[in-house]
Image (cartoon, rainbow, N blue to C red; front, side):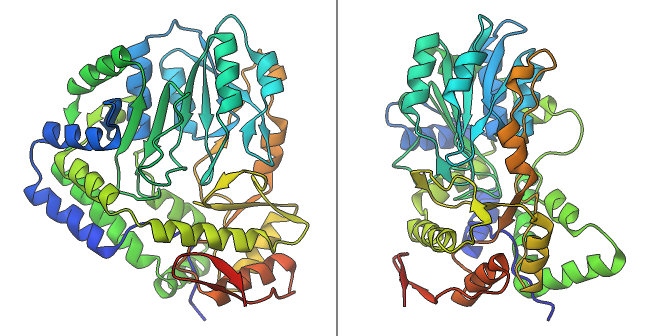
Length: 416
């Protein structure tokens, strides 16, 4: 009984790893590959390929050169490096608390937080869902703010490359993301002058080495193999026997950047193998898997007990990149899932609560803090069997079994 279903499954096939490794041999001329990738992403020529969303965000702020002390309203839950990048440019992140049911920033609160120093609003689409951008765009126009959207967790295919109301839309294809290329990002920048400044600034950066990208591909190939149920369960058991922190090991193994100064690590252009692999991944994107993932998440969300709530349960658009639930007893839920052979964790995502500046107590994100305190990430990817998804419901319900289900090849979920 050493098998354990991992908390997350990388959205990549073995043949995709093979393509990435072979691209390290044949792929040349990063400028040409980048131009082709950008043209395919945005026929309007508004795209910029970067090594990561964080690199692209750094480029954006560097090219804008906002006055020091300017404020940026940010979703109260986001990746902490986005805040670190703002601070590195002398800017102040002011969190806007979230509506836990929709994961959207509370606009009535944002209205009270705007000051003469506010320059922009950064909206994070969380956990595979999307926040409606219409009201946020109207808010930004009303106050003369730039509107940026972080779509790192919200990719659903090349038909949607960002909301046209946003000034900048940022998509990530890092290791844990949908349609991963083990790195890479695409930004839609709708101001031609700004885009050209960002492009020129990126040309001054050193290119990512081919060996560095190959090493990342090999690392995540090994991670994919280790996170099969049997080796993953054995790894968890060994950690338990040795008294080591299993969650820390898993979370550390998927980090894209080393500890230490962040900005210097961001100033790297994407390599030719990375650009070639990302173009290939987008051409061969598995939409069927996406639909199956969304269907599995919807089935699971409809069978949770009353005391366990899906974060963002009222979102209009969601594909369940991750499946975060809020529990009053998160540790009990994690233990119940692991006893059922299903890994669950508090820290399956790097996002965290943004703290309010010391002189802005009215920006304290109380709802976001409460949500994150009870958040547990459950596995809900489409490779899980019907029995495994049922065991998750049993664990969440404390023993009551759900009705059986089947998933068709097209990803629809039906009760049997």
